Image 1 (spheres, rainbow, N blue to C red):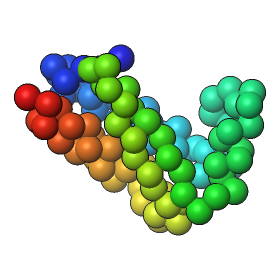
Image 2 (cartoon, helix red, strand yellow):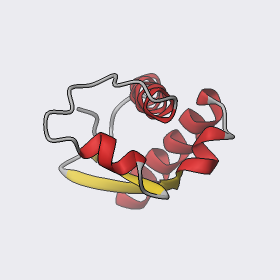
Image 3 (cartoon, helix red, strand yellow):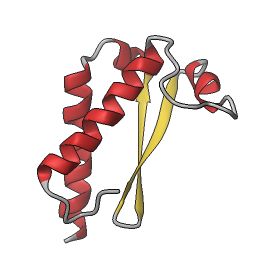
Length: 92
């Protein structure tokens, strides 16, 4: 789990992992255990909402599937990282 004091490389690794998972789901893969079927259900909606746990807080990000489809994994990671860093800067 990352916190607002985590090094940039740690935050980037977490953002990379999130982006990789989102792109895999967008391609129809099932990269994580989906026992409740929530990931499959989210794929049938126009957007997906996911959370990033930081410093005892949950940052919620909502993205449309068409944007995810047309955006590279690297660009998604950068977007998520910016979001995480903005949250860190706001908490100082």
